[in-house]
Length: 115
Image (cartoon, rainbow, N blue to C red; front, side, top):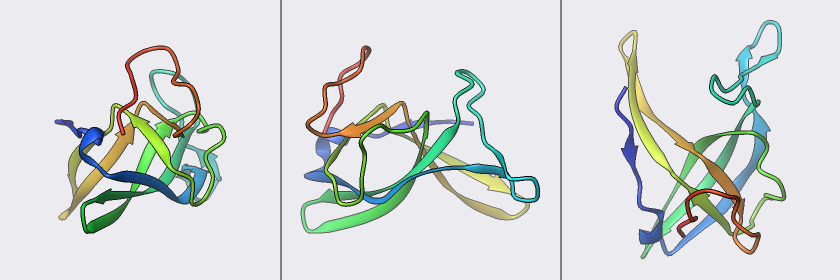
C-alpha cells in the first residue's frame, strides 16, 4: 500500500478533537490492535487539521498511547502519512503518525516534529 507523506508544517494549527483511545481489532473478543513492528497497542486520535479558513477532523492511528494528549490541546505530529485503501467495494484514506504529543512537550528522539 502506498503511503503519502503530509507536511504538517503547512497547517496553521493541529488540535486534539477526540482524545486517544485504543483501537479494537476484534469487536467480539475485545482484542486490541497491536503494531506489527513495535508490539505496542495502536491508539486512534481525532485531530483537527487547520489551514487558513478551513479545518478537517481526521482519525490518526499511532503506536503507543500519546502521553499527555487531551481534548482541545494543540499537538505536534511527527511523520504523518495518508494511506488510500479499498476493500470489498469500500474505500477511504487511513492516516497514521509516528508520534503525537502536546505541542509544548519535548520531542522524542528521532526526526523533528513539524507543526
